Length: 128
Image 1 (cartoon, rainbow, N blue to C red):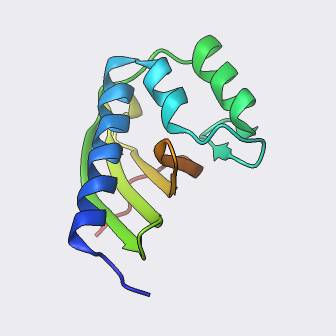
Image 2 (cartoon, helix red, strand yellow):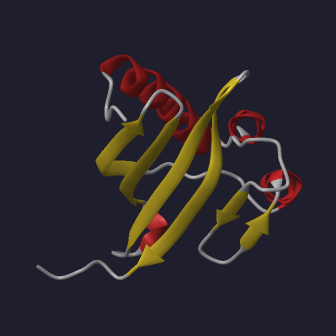
Protein backbone atom coordinates (compact mmCIF):
# COMPACT_ATOMS: atom_id res chain seq x y z
CA UNK A 1 0.00 0.00 0.00
CA UNK A 2 1.30 3.42 -0.92
CA UNK A 3 1.05 6.07 1.77
CA UNK A 4 0.63 9.78 0.96
CA UNK A 5 0.53 9.74 -2.83
CA UNK A 6 0.78 13.47 -3.59
CA UNK A 7 -2.28 13.64 -5.86
CA UNK A 8 -4.45 11.76 -3.33
CA UNK A 9 -3.23 13.95 -0.45
CA UNK A 10 -4.17 17.01 -2.53
CA UNK A 11 -7.68 15.63 -3.21
CA UNK A 12 -8.36 14.79 0.43
CA UNK A 13 -6.89 18.08 1.63
CA UNK A 14 -9.22 19.97 -0.72
CA UNK A 15 -12.26 18.05 0.59
CA UNK A 16 -11.08 18.55 4.18
CA UNK A 17 -10.61 22.30 3.63
CA UNK A 18 -14.08 22.48 2.10
CA UNK A 19 -15.47 20.78 5.22
CA UNK A 20 -13.69 23.18 7.57
CA UNK A 21 -14.83 26.23 5.58
CA UNK A 22 -18.40 24.93 5.87
CA UNK A 23 -17.95 24.62 9.67
CA UNK A 24 -16.75 28.23 9.85
CA UNK A 25 -19.67 29.47 7.73
CA UNK A 26 -22.39 27.33 9.33
CA UNK A 27 -23.06 25.65 5.96
CA UNK A 28 -24.97 22.53 7.05
CA UNK A 29 -25.81 21.52 3.46
CA UNK A 30 -22.14 21.16 2.53
CA UNK A 31 -21.36 19.33 5.78
CA UNK A 32 -24.20 16.89 5.13
CA UNK A 33 -22.95 16.36 1.59
CA UNK A 34 -19.45 15.53 2.82
CA UNK A 35 -20.61 12.80 5.21
CA UNK A 36 -21.18 9.47 3.47
CA UNK A 37 -24.94 8.92 3.26
CA UNK A 38 -25.16 5.53 4.95
CA UNK A 39 -26.38 4.02 8.22
CA UNK A 40 -22.79 2.95 9.03
CA UNK A 41 -21.48 6.54 9.08
CA UNK A 42 -20.89 7.87 12.57
CA UNK A 43 -19.89 11.03 14.39
CA UNK A 44 -18.87 11.21 18.02
CA UNK A 45 -19.14 14.82 19.18
CA UNK A 46 -18.34 16.61 22.43
CA UNK A 47 -21.84 15.95 23.77
CA UNK A 48 -23.46 13.54 21.30
CA UNK A 49 -23.02 10.14 19.64
CA UNK A 50 -24.57 10.13 16.18
CA UNK A 51 -25.08 6.87 14.28
CA UNK A 52 -25.96 7.07 10.61
CA UNK A 53 -26.12 9.88 8.10
CA UNK A 54 -29.70 10.73 9.04
CA UNK A 55 -28.81 11.36 12.70
CA UNK A 56 -25.82 13.48 11.67
CA UNK A 57 -27.95 15.48 9.23
CA UNK A 58 -30.67 16.04 11.83
CA UNK A 59 -28.07 17.26 14.34
CA UNK A 60 -26.70 19.74 11.80
CA UNK A 61 -30.14 21.11 10.98
CA UNK A 62 -31.51 21.42 14.51
CA UNK A 63 -28.73 21.78 17.08
CA UNK A 64 -25.83 23.46 15.38
CA UNK A 65 -25.08 26.88 13.94
CA UNK A 66 -21.38 26.81 13.04
CA UNK A 67 -18.30 28.14 14.73
CA UNK A 68 -15.21 29.98 13.49
CA UNK A 69 -12.10 28.09 14.56
CA UNK A 70 -8.34 28.33 14.25
CA UNK A 71 -6.91 25.00 13.14
CA UNK A 72 -3.35 23.86 13.88
CA UNK A 73 -1.28 20.67 13.82
CA UNK A 74 -3.37 19.43 10.89
CA UNK A 75 -2.25 16.09 9.44
CA UNK A 76 -3.75 14.39 6.37
CA UNK A 77 -2.54 10.83 5.73
CA UNK A 78 -3.72 8.78 2.78
CA UNK A 79 -3.52 5.02 2.41
CA UNK A 80 -3.64 3.87 -1.18
CA UNK A 81 -6.00 5.81 -3.43
CA UNK A 82 -9.28 5.41 -1.55
CA UNK A 83 -8.76 5.81 2.21
CA UNK A 84 -7.52 8.67 4.39
CA UNK A 85 -7.41 10.05 7.92
CA UNK A 86 -7.44 13.79 8.66
CA UNK A 87 -6.68 15.13 12.14
CA UNK A 88 -6.40 18.61 13.60
CA UNK A 89 -6.41 20.57 16.80
CA UNK A 90 -8.50 23.73 17.02
CA UNK A 91 -9.18 26.79 19.12
CA UNK A 92 -12.40 28.78 19.44
CA UNK A 93 -13.04 31.81 21.64
CA UNK A 94 -15.85 30.04 23.51
CA UNK A 95 -13.56 27.19 24.60
CA UNK A 96 -12.06 29.41 27.32
CA UNK A 97 -8.51 28.09 27.02
CA UNK A 98 -9.47 24.49 26.30
CA UNK A 99 -8.57 22.85 23.00
CA UNK A 100 -10.59 20.97 20.45
CA UNK A 101 -9.57 17.83 18.61
CA UNK A 102 -11.08 16.64 15.33
CA UNK A 103 -10.35 13.36 13.57
CA UNK A 104 -12.05 12.08 10.45
CA UNK A 105 -11.82 8.92 8.38
CA UNK A 106 -12.45 9.57 4.69
CA UNK A 107 -13.27 7.16 1.87
CA UNK A 108 -13.43 7.68 -1.88
CA UNK A 109 -16.87 6.97 -3.36
CA UNK A 110 -18.24 7.49 -6.88
CA UNK A 111 -19.52 10.93 -5.76
CA UNK A 112 -16.10 11.87 -4.30
CA UNK A 113 -14.37 11.88 -0.93
CA UNK A 114 -16.76 11.44 2.01
CA UNK A 115 -16.38 11.21 5.78
CA UNK A 116 -17.24 7.74 7.07
CA UNK A 117 -16.34 8.31 10.72
CA UNK A 118 -15.62 11.44 12.75
CA UNK A 119 -14.68 12.27 16.32
CA UNK A 120 -14.70 15.73 17.89
CA UNK A 121 -13.71 16.32 21.50
CA UNK A 122 -12.83 19.22 23.79
CA UNK A 123 -10.18 18.81 26.49
CA UNK A 124 -8.20 20.92 28.90
CA UNK A 125 -5.13 22.22 27.09
CA UNK A 126 -2.22 19.98 28.07
CA UNK A 127 0.61 21.67 29.97
CA UNK A 128 4.08 21.53 28.48
